[in-house]
Amino acid sequence: MPYLIEVQQQSFISSPSPDTHRAALSARARLDLTRWYYGAAVMVAKTTNPPFSKILIAGAGPSGLLLALLLAQHDIPSLVLESWPGLDTRLRATQYGVPATRIFRRAGLLADIRKASIPKFPTICWRRVADGEKLVEIDMSLVEEEEDRMTVLQLGEIIQIMYKHCMDPEKGRGLIDVRFNHRVTGTGQDEDKAWVEVEVGKEGEEKRHERLEADYVVGCDGAASAVRRSLHGREWPGQTFDCRFMVQNVFYDGFADHGWEGGNYMIDPDHWGLIARRGHGGLWRVTYGDPVPGLTDEEYLARRPWHFKAMLPGHPDPDQYRIEHTNIYNIHNRCVDSFKVGRILLAADAAHACNPMGGYGCMTACLDVGGLADCFIGYHQNRAGPEILETYAKVRRDIFLKYVDARSIKNLNRVSKADPRTVAETDPFFKIVKELNKDPEEMKKFLMKVSSIEYDFTQHYDQRPAATHATSNAVNGTSNGISNGVEEHSENEGAKAEVALHMEAV
Ligand SMILES: Cc1cc2nc3c(=O)[nH]c(=O)nc-3n(C[C@H](O)[C@H](O)[C@H](O)COP(=O)(O)OP(=O)(O)OC[C@H]3O[C@@H](n4cnc5c(N)ncnc54)[C@H](O)[C@@H]3O)c2cc1C
Image 1: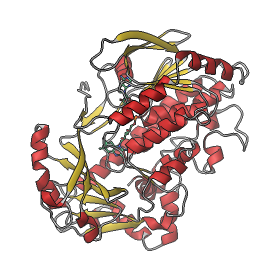
Image 2: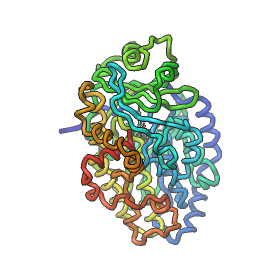
Image 3: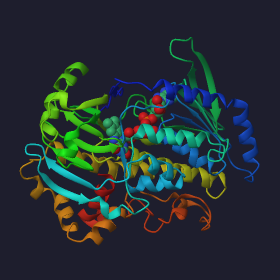
C-alpha cells in the first residue's frame, strides 16, 4: 500500500517573536564559516586520526540543537541549518518523561530547565469529561525530590535554553554554528562526503543557493523533513488521524477554584485531550482533538467555546478565561523505512512521528539524538567503526515501531475511544495504576525506572568507556538496566513494563 501523504502538518496562527528573531540573528552574526572550519581543525588535532571531522545538521529544533550540544561536548563540530529566521516557538511539547530528563542532564541543560519550570507538578489523573470525575490518579509528589523526574516546560522555552548553551563559549565550545534563514532543499552524497542544497535568505528577499558539505548529514528537520523527502520521496508509512488537534495556552481562575492541579487527561469521544498546568502565573495548556475532520481553522476556532464549556471545570463561558496563544495541528503516527542512507541519517520527527497523547514525541527525539551522538562519538574516537551508525538506524527504528508507535496509539485510544463510563474498570493500564497506588515505594520505583525505549549504544564500542568518560549513560548513573538489545526488552514484564513506560510518558 503506498503511503503518499501531504506532510505539511501545521497551520500557523503564530510565528516566532521578533525578539527571538533578533536574538538569533545577532548570535548568528558572531559565528562565521571561517570560525567553524577553524574550530573543526583545532579539535580534529585533539583526537588521533579521527575518521571524520564535521557533521551537518538540518533543523534547529530540539533534536538538532541537542545533537549539536552532545557532539560539541566531545570535540565534534557541527553546522546547524534552520529554515526559519528564529527558533520555533509554536505551542507543542510541554512534558518529557524520565528518559528525556536523563539526556537533558547529560547535555548539561537540566539545571536551567528546572529553573524555568514550575516547581511542582503534584499529580497526573484521568477524568471523565461528562461529570469531571477523577477516575485514576498518580501521585507525582512521590518523585518530586528525584533529579531525573519528569520535566515540565514549554518546548519553546527549552529550545531557547538549548540555543543559549550552543552559543555559550564554554558549553558549545565554539564548535556549533547555527544559521537561520537556511532552508535545506535537497541532499546528495558520494563515497567521501555528503551535502545539502540550501536556499539562503530572509523572507521577501532574493534567495541565494548554496551547497554545504560535511562528512555526514543528519536530518533533524521535523515532520515535514526535506532530508527525509530527499531520501524517501513522499513515502512515510503510517497514519494520519481523522481529527484536528487544538492547542492553546489558557489563563482561567476556575482551575484553582475547582482544585485542579498537574496533568488531567480528559476521556470523551467528543472532547478528549489533556489539560495541564504548564507555567508560572497560572498558565495552563488546554489541548483537545476536534473529531470533525475537514473544517477551516476559523470553523475549528468557532467550535472552541463548546469544547471548553464541556471540558473545563465550572463549564465557563468565553468571557471567563483568556486564551493567549493557539496552534492547530494534524496528528500522525508514522515511521520511515530506513533512518540511514549512506552518509545521510534521520532522527526524531524527521524519521518518525507520533500523536501527542503520552508525550512520546520529543522524549523519543531526545533518545534518538542521545544515541546517535554516542555512535558518532565512539566512531570519532576510533572506538567503534562506521557500522555503529547502521546499528543506530536499526535499533532506534525498531524501538519506535515496537514501543513508541504502539503505546502512543494506546494512549490516544484510551482518551478518545474508550467508554468513559467503564474504562476505569476495563483498561488494564488503569488496573495496574490502582494496584501500584497501594504501595508508594513500588510506584516510585516504576516512575523512575529505566525504560524499554532507552538504549545504550556505547555497548557497541570496541572498548567500553572508562567510568570517568563523559559519554552516554555511563556517567549519568543509569547504565544499569539500560537496554542491551531491543529483543531483550520485549514485553517480558508484561503489562507492568508498559505501565512503567506510560508513567514516564504520561
Ligand atoms: C501539540 C503537540 C504537543 C506535543 N506534546 C509533546 C509532549 O508533551 N512531550 C513530547 O515529548 N513531545 C510532544 N510533542 C512532540 C514534539 O513537539 C516533537 O516530537 C518534537 O518537537 C520533535 O523535535 P524535532 O527536533 O525532531 O522537530 P521540530 O521540533 O519540528 O524541529 C525541526 C526544525 O527543523 C526546521 N526545519 C524544517 N524544515 C527545514 C528545512 N527544510 N531546512 C532547515 N530547517 C528546517 C524547523 O523549522 C524546526 O525548527 C508534541 C507535539 C505537538 C504537535
